[in-house]
Length: 334
Ligand SMILES: [Zn+2]
Image (cartoon, helix red, strand yellow):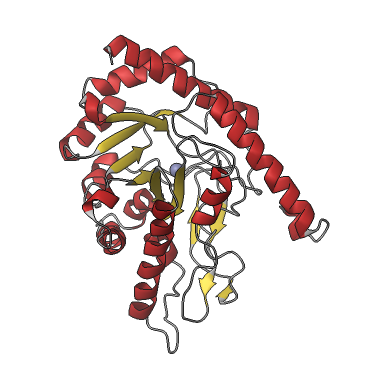
């Protein structure tokens, strides 16, 4: 991606490399035994900006996100309306499904993350309300196309949820984010929403986080207001997992599926299956078994500008998740 951006390889050459990376990812993902796989986001410029990559109505100088290790990420800023996605996530799903018969989960970015593109001081002839109407419609399309085109589930990446509590301890920003995402979710039927989930984490970029210091007790009550069927919750890297599990239990409803994170993608150490098994058993003491699933705490940040996690490490960790979950299922007699 870097070579292409620098003009040193052609679009065709990039496409060949994309195809090779996608095939390799899917083969290796299938080999882990994971019952649901993804495309590993191999061709996304980033988890957040794929819909707007190449959009002409963007300029520099948007919202800056500081990480614990001192590095920052800066979003672009919208310069004019009307706001339209350039790429919908179903494009990645279609490519992945050419290469596998396994169920494929598709990640999409939240409407709330993209709402940060609108400049603080407004835009002439394109109001914030009009922007949000356009954004809600586009975010709905992004999800709906994935459902229609056969995703086993659609996961909304909502990493800014935890960050929002850090930026605004009054939680008004979190409530606004949840309300905006619910405007999108309300456009789906209850049956469709059962196939939609949300992912929360403290960020995971260049092996650093942006909001791990925010207490889950301040986030989870608001998060569970989202009208989704599944919650994919970073947990492995939490200091007091038992406490977080009890907060989850307190706020989850019986129709919710809770996928607890059992793998920490930021930790270079590869978890053993036994370690994963014990994390699942710990969760099973609190969360009813029929609601419980496992996941990785976060993605492995497989983007062109973050080479912090080698592919072999990522797949070894996923193998440990699958093997450890199987050990736990056996121990629990399910
Ligand atoms: Zn994440």
